[in-house]
Image (tube, rainbow, N blue to C red; front, side, top):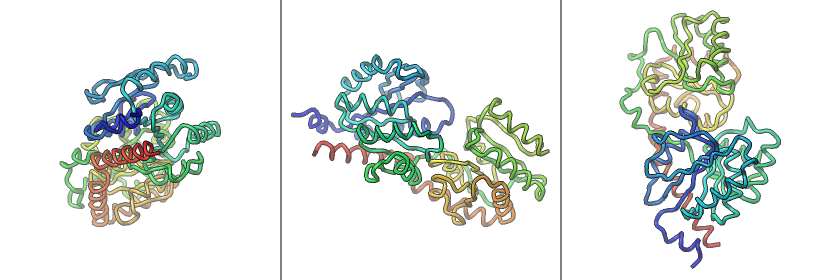
Length: 384
């Protein structure tokens, strides 16, 4: 009996997830990996976890039954490629890994090559954004890996699938869309937003890191416009830190809206923060499938998002929220004013959004989609 045939007789598929490191907080890929590990059906998937670089994970973020390997590679991966590859190879062999799911460029480069060379039947890559960060070198490496070492790619949005096909020459039939998941039960205690429950003054907010790609500067400029018509409105952003806030604090001061716009930093209880908002905004310049937007919708907040990446896959304009062009403070301000002036419309959008998330993006449902894909691809591989 071949090794692959023996593996298929096991009830659970052995899947090795490999990522660069475990960044605490709300980093999107790490958040989704934690959710996936927590919700995988252990009768179908037996997970293993590998960290490539010297970014240690607190064990509290990893389910206790999941075996973990720390490779502790330096930032210059090529320095330790050979020595660490033997350690990784032993881990794969010892645990009879059937499938590797890799995240991030360095982990994907390392794991796909070593995995294939030591006989792992299936290797998955991942695409969780629209590649706004990719340099020509990154695209060349990705094309090479997709041609020789990666069997399938899991994208979290149709926009990301299209990007990986265009940028990396991936074959369309090899790219699958499995959306981000969310633990909707975390938001169950938040009442539906209705105009009668609106705050006085109105509160408009966002959740996300204060990085240029997230469009914090666009929201600040939009807030200045909104405040000209609604001078009591309050704006808040949950995310970032004192260092990343510096340029935006200056912008806020220069706009003369410091009493109305507050950068709160990272918050532990996002549902509690969202419950205080009347309008939730995602002003990003680029997105995959936004965790923040999913949270807005799960919390039943009237939502506005820029029409980039997968945002248009979550928000259907004028049914469950509003979409606006990116890099356009006036359009964003107009949308905020529209919802302020039409609270019944805002409430309808919020209710529709909440229903959509509960129906389509529950973490357990998404985990089952991943299980289905792993089992199907592995069976097809063995038949060949």
